[in-house]
Length: 480
Image 1 (cartoon, rainbow, N blue to C red):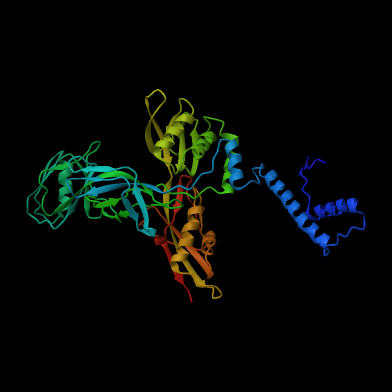
Image 2: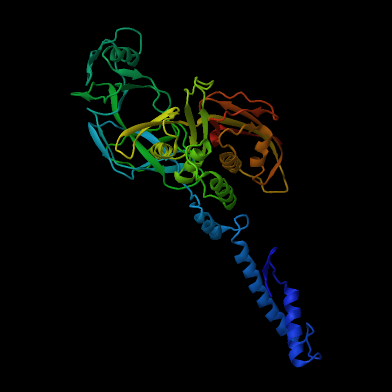
C-alpha cells in the first residue's frame, strides 16, 4: 500500500491501528479470540496500538518538516539553508561615543565598560582607545571658578589664545569667540556636557600643550565604539551612555552624541518563513531596488529593515535625490558592512545617495564612496490614565512601563505610524489593568516638550523615520 499519495501522507489514526491489530490476531487465532478493551488481550493491544500510532505521528512530523509553511525550529533552519539563508540570531545594541580624560594622555583598554543608566545596561569598548591631549579629536573646557580680569593663556595647536575678560559676559562665551578668531571651532553642546565648551579643528586633530590654565578643567576626547554586553531588543539614545561602572585609570567621562544601532531579538519561525519567501523571489537578482534591499537584510549582520527608492528621471526629485540615483534607507548593521554590500549589488554606473557616506575598497583596490540613509528617530511620549483591576494583582509602575517599552520596540519599525489606541495592546501586556486610555506625543529631540493629543489620534511617521520610546517618556496616572 502507498502511504504517500497525491494528497500527501495518509496517516493512520489510533483507532485504525487498533482495528488492524485486532483483525490480524483473529486471522491467526480465530474469530473467537478475545480482543475487548478490558480483557488482558485487549489491554495488550491498546499499548501496542499506542506505540505504533506514535510512530505514525513521528512519520507525519518528519513529512511536514519538508514544508516551509509548516516546518519549525531546526528543521526550518535546514530548509532555509537550502536557499542560502540562515536564521538571524539576536544582536546586541551598538553605539559610538566619545571617551574623555583629564590627564595628558590615557590608554583605555578594549573591554572597558560604560553604562546606560536606564536598565543598568553595560556596554564594552570594542577596541582600545588612546587619548593624547596634544592630538585628539576634541577638547572639552569647563569653567572651574575662573575670575574676571585675569589672564588665562591656552596653548592650542592652532595658536595661542589669551582670555582676559573684564566684561560681564561669562568667561567661556568670551573664550569661544577668541578661539573662533584664532582658527578653531568652538560650540556649546547640550546634554551631559552642558556648561562645557567643545573645541575642534575642521578636518584635523586638535590639541593643547604646555601648562594648563588654572581655574579650568580640560578634557581631551577620542571616539570609540561600544557593544552591549547582552543581546536583545535594546536601544541607546543620545546621551544615555554617560557613566563608567568600573573605574579605568585616566578615563574620566563618556558621552554618546548620536543614537546607537538597536539590538534585535532572535528571528522567530514566522519571521524566517516570511523572509525566506521574499528572498527566494528576489535574492538571485542584482541591481534592482528589491534585490539591493533583500541582499542587505539577508547578508549584513544587524540589519533589521531596508528599502530602496530610485530616481530614474533626468532631474532632481522632490526628496532631493539627484538624477539617475538611488537611495537605500536602512536600519541596523554597521556603516562599513552596509556600504560594502550596496557596492556589491548596486547597478553599474548609477549614483548612490543618502545622509551617510562611507568609503569602501573595490575589487581592484580603489576607493569608492557609497552613500545611504539612516532612519531618523522620532521621540515618543505616552501619558497613560488607568484604573486597577482588583481581581488581579496590581502591577508596579516599572512593570507597566517595561511592558510598553518592549511592545513599542516590536511595533515601531520604519514608517509605522503611532496609532494611539493601539498602545492598549502593550498596556494590557501586564495583569491588573482595568479601564484605561492613552495619549501620545512626538518630539524631534529626546528632551523636547510633548504636546499630548487625544486618545484617538494617529501620529504620522515618515517612511525614513521610526518612533522611539523609553520608560522616562511614559507618564502614568492612576485613577481610583
